Length: 103
Image (tube, rainbow, N blue to C red; front, side, top):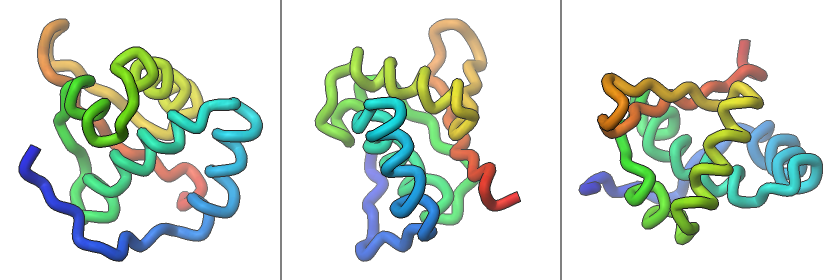
């Protein structure tokens, strides 16, 4: 993945003040927050609607194992914080970062 993140990353207050504590404390899944933050930086913070990444690419970006990324993606999907689209069963998924608090 050739996308570079220009620092500093600007985050909405909700992401740090509420979502961090909720995913880490309530769901007991710091990995979910890392995955969300990584996808957020590639989409919303970069002015894009979506990003297409393999599990391996997400794992490399976050330093997590592929199984930890899979579990995190399930939590984020269940919490309606991301939407994942697969063109086919074996295609690289496309991720949309959702911000339900911004509605």
